[in-house]
Image (cartoon, rainbow, N blue to C red; front, top):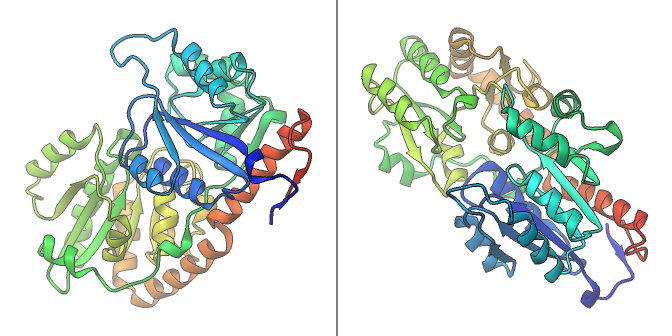
Amino acid sequence: MVVRQVMPTNRINLMHAVLEMDIGGLQRLITQMTLAMDRDLFNIEIVCMNREGCFADTLRSHGIKVTLLQKNQHRADLWYPVRLAAFLRRKKTHILQMHPGVFIFGALAGRMAFTPCTVYTEHGRAVVDDPVRQAEDKLAVKLVDRVVAVSSNLNDMLVERIKAPRRKLVTIINGIATDMFATRPRPATLVHEFGLPPDCRVIGTVARLDEIKDQLSMIRAFEIVCQRVGDCRLFLVGDGPLRDDLTVYINQQNLQGKVIITGQRSDVPDFLNLFDVFVLSSLSEGTSISLLEAMASGVPPVVTRVGGNPDIVEHGTDGLVVEPRDPEALADAIAKLLLDGELHKRFASKCIAKVTRDYSIERMVQSYCQMYLEILHRKNRFHDVSI
């Protein structure tokens, strides 16, 4: 609970810097975090570097300002940190909260603008870092007050890859607005839209279509599952650079109508209620928002043993964990959940209880607020505010 001795006119100005606010787990997290924070204490705004996206409209409908301060999209924009610094000064920003893609630009701008509190949150890294990004991050980490990792595995990775000093690192596990997700009957609108037979089993994922998510292994596992279980569908909810390659494979294997790529959707909670099993076949992962949302909806997960996945899913208790790049093992786990009704029911109950207890957005926001105020207090700002 936040105890304040400040007047609403003396709010703390918090600026999220992000590439864009289009549909995605990171963007949903920022939106839910913003809406869950104390608006009497924090004046929260968003600045986008590439484009705005649909979540910008959601935030504006709740009175949150979203600004597109666009970086040059065709060539290197060396002056962008200067423009961003001028924007931060004009907004009298007290806290600059950066997200992937804007780290080096935000770190330089925050230093030039003398922003009192600068924080970067790492949500996940590639299996192999791009050398340019790695060099930029090594510089940027020297310029900020804190670096947040969303899993313990990611915390260690930041020490190893960009030499982040442990004194600057903090682990804050992602949370979700648990009241938005619940076990419900299959949505009739989606059943009708995709022509699903009554007894059809549905396997699904919600993720960017990208090599790091390895949806190709998921499709290969699905082919095996179909041989064992019968009538099934696989839904890939999302879009991304791997879509064309996945579509080619689906057509080559005559899986049209069986494997469905939906593209970006705004009705993710409804899709989760459509699924019997949720799958993450990632090669690298932070703390997956989609995984937490699926578990909160009572959908048992099958995930790969990477990043924060095994921290969330306890193998054999509330889900199944397999090694990455192993379609056979993935298929075995999916089939097991589809064929064992008692196991499925037990996992579903455990999933809901775990997410409600350990992964609420309120818990996450509390941790961020404590960190922000600790930094501000150290810099002689807002001493009359405590948590």
